[in-house]
Structures are given as structure tokens and as C-alpha cells.
Image (cartoon, rainbow over all chains, first blue to last red; front, side, top):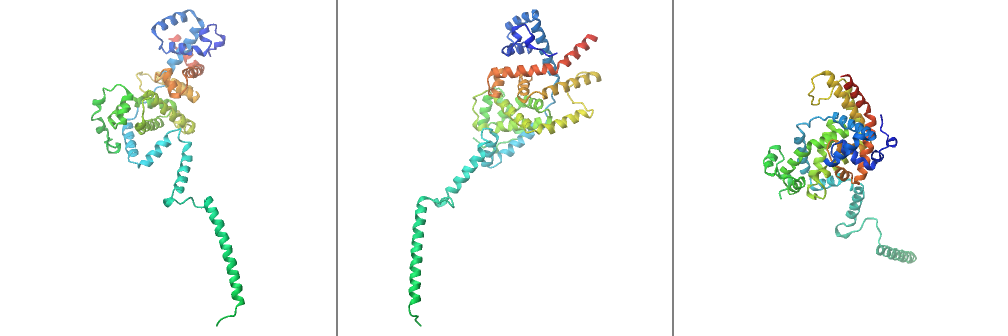
Length: 169
Length: 219
């Protein structure tokens, strides 16, 4: 039967604030003096008797969840993994370490992109990212276009002049 | 300090000076020695915590093979973190924080469904778990297996965080402060978590107690 704290008349069993006292009593972790005092209370309080009996039953029932012995090869397999881990190059170990830290995981793609961008930007010789146009480059391009247009104009005039001139044999 | 890769990892090599550091009482001191390159100290830590971590994992994921794999990952991460280790929290709290993180991740990834099927199949084929059993009769064994199964299922139905809290409280005998350290929450939050978890277990396992009382009455 489910224990219902609302139906209880004992203030000790009516709220979670006493959870520590109740749970520690059942798991026999209370200080001896407190254990003795609370035991006296339980002996005369039906609500606490009901609660502690039910909780003690759960506590004892949980002992049935037994475990199997750890396999004998556990340590050997672990040391082999450690040895394998230690033989990796430093950057793989750093990557694995970062990957294993949950706080870093969301930042890994961002960090990778940032590293890639920096790597492309800081190329040998100080070249900038291909396709990127700086202000100086933009000014330079305008001058080049003007100059090219002037050259074309000059060539056009020149060709007209040449066309009008008598052909030399 | 010699690089770890250059040190012997074979069990025999590791055990050579285990006794020399066995007198160290505190896990944090051992871990600091691991940080300084002492693999024997790591072997002692492993010896101390292997069982509790594997058993905790087994009760969390309810599959022995998976539990051991996850536990290996726990110790591997501990070893990998040795260079940056600072004893800011109790070693055990730190260890179980890693273990809980891995177990919860495994459960949330949905990998448990496959693992659970394998355990259920194993138990459903008429096979019984090989647990230490001092009782001679078949009836006792069946009763024991039945109780194991009831408790296992009751724990399995708990929300993951409640499950972890109960396992640390009941089986690892960790106090509220330590469990709060694992979850990085307040002690009052842990007490509330445990209270709700035990309340659920009281409901789910009430029939076990009723059955036991009935058997005792007949005897």
C-alpha cells in the first residue's frame, strides 16, 4: 500500500524536509543519540511506524539487486586501451581529450571553423584569404580599371590613326 | 618526468612498486602521483574503485558487458585527465561524476534498448543469473531470482537521475553532499530526489513485502 503523507497526522512524515531524518533512520545512518530519540518516537507514532516499515522493506528488498563479479580481463583490457591511447599523436590525444569534456563539445565545430579560418588567413608571406577584397585592393582595382580604359582609348585612337595613315610597303 | 607511453603498462610491471605506494591513504594523493607519472598509483586507484564503478554501471545500464565497457571508459578518462587533475573535489565524487555522465549519456542515446533486450532475452530463456548463492534449494533460488527481477525492473522504471541517486545512496553508501557533488546541485535537491525515488520504489515493491510477510506468517 502506498504511503500517503497527506493522510498522516505526524508532522515528521508530512514533508520532504524530513526526508533526511527518515531515510537515515531506515538506512541506520543516524547519529546514535538521534537514532535512539527517533526510535522512541516511532514506537508510539503509527504514521512513522507505517512509513519506516514500508521504507525498511524497500531498503531490504533492494539488497536483492545483486551484481556479478568483474571479469578477470578488465584490468588487462584497460591497460591495453591506455597504452593505445598514449601511442596516439599529440593532436589526436588533445582532440580526444576535448571530445571527452562535455563542456567543450558544442564548441568543437566552432573552434574547428575558427582554426580553419585563421589557417587560411595567415598564409606564408602574409597573403590574405583568396577572394577577400581589402580597401586598398579596392582602390587599386579602380585605378587599374581607369588606366585600362585610358589604354583602350589610346589604342583605339592609335588604330584609327594607323588606319588613316598610308600603308608602308 | 618520463612520458607515459614509455612506461611499462603490463600488469606485472605496474605491480612492481604497488606496495611502495599502498600506504597512501587518500585517493587525491594517489591521483597527484599519477599526474606525476606514477602508474602504480593508478593501479591502486583502479583496484580500489574498479568494483564500485562497474557495479554502479551495471545497476544503471543493467547489462554486464556494457557496464564494463563504460567503466573502462571512466578509468580511461581519469587517466587521460591526469595532467590537469586538481584535487578540488573528492576523488570519488569526481569519479562518480564521470561515471554518471557516461551512464546517463548511454541511456539517453537509446543504446539501452538494445542492451536491455539482450538481458531480458537471457533471463527469458529460462536461464538464471549466476549470482553468489549460499542457499541450496531450487525454491529459494527461484525466489531470489524473482526478487532480483522485481527490484531490477522497479529501478529501471525510475527516472534516470533518481535511479543514479538511489544507486549511489543505497549501494555506494554515498552521503547527500557527495551525491550533490556528483550532480553539481544542492543537498536539498538530492534529498528531494531521493525522497521521490524511494516513494516510487515503495509503491512498486510493496507486493514483495506483502509476499514476504505472508510467507513468514505461514511458517
